[in-house]
Amino acid sequence: GSCKEFLKWWKGLERDGAGRYQLLRRIDPNVLRKIFRTEMEAEVLGEIIQTLHGHLDGAKELAGGDDAETAVHAVKFLNATTQLSRFKLNVNFLGKQEKAAVKQVVDWSLSVTAELRAEGEQVINSFGCV
Picture: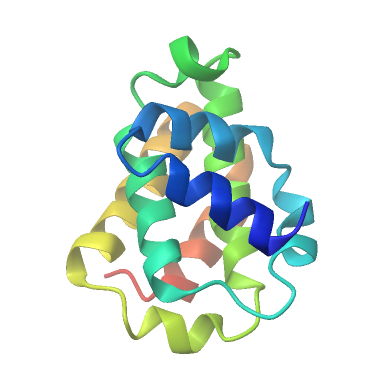
C-alpha cells in the first residue's frame, strides 16, 4: 500500500474510530516505512496515537487476538512511527495529551506483557513522554 491509499482510507474513516483501529491492526508495523516513505504528517501521527489509545479496551472485539497481541501491536506500531523521516520534527507538534496517551498505551502494554520493556522505554523516550 501507499501513503495516498492509507490517507484515503484513514480520512474516509474520520468518524469511525473503530474502523480506524481495525485499519491500524491490519498494518504490519514493519511496513510503515514503505507506506510513509517521505513522512507521516504530525496531524495523522496524533490521530493514530489517539486511535490506539482509545481502543485498548475494545481491541479484542474489534481485531481479535488477546491483550498480549494488542499490546505487542501497539508498542511496535508506535516504535515504527519513531523510525519515520521527520519524526523528531513531528513530535514538536504533538500536545501534552498525545504524549500522555503514548505513555498510557505503553504502560498498559507493559502491564500485559513484559517482553516489550526495552521497546516500550524506547518509545517513551523518543516521544519525550514524562
